[in-house]
Length: 512
Ligand code: NDP
Image (cartoon, rainbow, N blue to C red; front, top):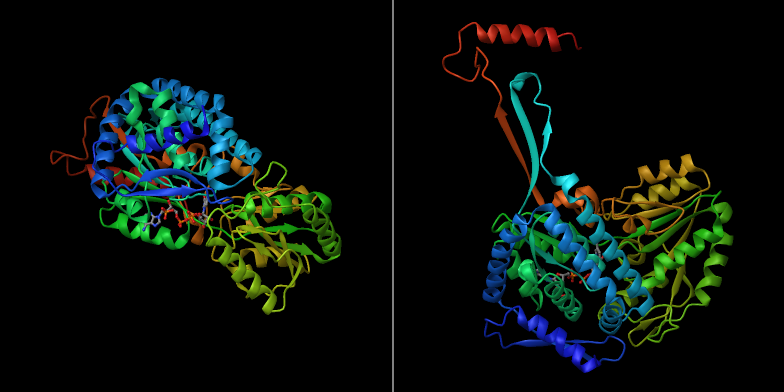
């Protein structure tokens, strides 16, 4: 299929979700490297969003009725479709988001793996089970199951336009919900492609995954459209707006927000491996990674060696939009202004840029900053660019203290050869996720929950917690036989309460 035909396909796919509406306003998504138009998409208004949610509600019923096996089969068909068209999707991600084709392949691979895990583990995690009824209800059977919420709204960012929304979409679908997805205005073509792929792979429940496109108002309309839950991934300021809109209808929310993740390099660490991981964690995807490494705290004895290793590696990196480029442009032009502000603040407050510090159009040179005070915006705020601050600390304890002195708490990394020490530091790191002797690895383990604390948000995608996130727990008891004395009846004998108190005294009274 030619490029022009592909673009027509994705544009039609997005329009197809509202073909019963007279939405006339449209917007363009553009290639951040060249400015070329990637696609034209409808701006869905509140009526269009509500009708899409209503269609999803009807599909949700059919989707839920398919049961775990029926859904698993269809989720497998979807991932098969994605796997067979990986290069086509990666090409679209490259054009619309700017990241290298190879990085787009990696991102899609992760999404497919999560789809597989979610489909395979839904029954075991959510299916009906019997639990112990306990002493007070010994004559009853007790059952627990996790039921779908109906329609889940997903609002996603542009930096990982496949992997990030799929963290909610895959788990919400596997749990039995239909999904209405609002991609970022910067990556609507990828969102529309994902929904069109679903329609093609799962034609009998095509409306179980639909896309609405537009700006922030379209997302706000999704919050108010009566969805069972709203899964939001984006910045903390927008997260607050989403929570406020959802509060109007008491719609529950999942918040996956930003981070200011740190790496701790202990004095016994493999310094070369730590430097390599720090450079990847900070610079890949042009640093536009919520769980990217933005700060490194290095134990004094290995600081100089670490800085030398990082410098050597970073010297070999070049941003660009060609196949050899290490990373692409800033996807959102305004993000370059944030990076510039942080660099200016770092250097004017005593920091040194040993490398980079320059911006060329939408491309930012890989930047390493030393001696930046902890009060600087470059240390305190999310930069979301290919930058790294490296700070010398007395030891790993001081590194941990500084790591935790942030309002964010998404993820982080620890490098140490001592397993016990590394695990201890990882446990005490105030974050939802930590990798030891690597970076970002937790995101590629489908069984592990993904999410943050503090200003990084709440709730979890991925793993069993991610499946349960898109359900409501349902408790059922069934009386198996009647007892001669029923304590919850006005016919109970007067002495029953005394007898119960005596039993409780025997069972629990000995504990002090
Ligand atoms: P934004 O917060 O700007 O936008 C996120 C999404 O919300 C977009 O789809 C946006 O639409 C939409 N939106 C904007 N305004 C509203 C509104 N009033 N109501 C409802 N929806 C709205 O984030 P970015 O797209 O810039 O993404 C970058 C951020 O995401 C970073 O902070 C990053 O750390 C975080 N992130 C977190 C991850 C995690 O899992 N914790 C993973 C990936 C990123 P539109 O684009 O059309 O304005």
